[in-house]
Amino acid sequence: MATCLDARNVPSLPGVTPREVEAAWMHVKDMSMVLIDETRAADESMRTYVTDDGESVDWLAAASVVSSCPVNKSSSSIANEEIAL
Image 1 (cartoon, one colour):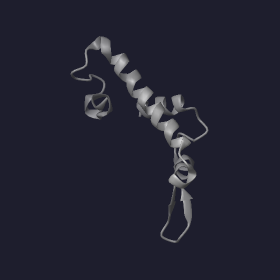
Image 2 (spheres, one colour):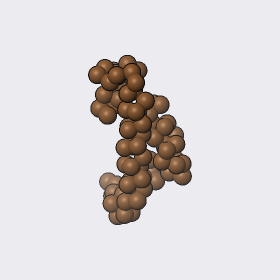
Image 3 (tube, one colour):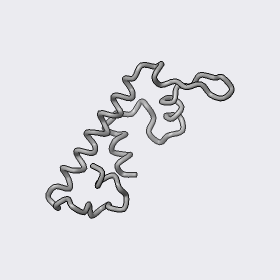
């Protein structure tokens, strides 16, 4: 997974045989989807932080507003977009 995520390795993926490249990327996508789903399922109290001015902010909602991957997209779509980046 680390080999896939290191931008210096893309697209060659050193140490991964050519026939295993697709499986490696599928593993990265599957793991990403699990993390996305776990983040979405996190209790709201785990997703909030207090800013310097005392305002409570949901970081997931805030990140979604400025992101190209809004929260309402499927975890599969978000994972695909992140991998493409």
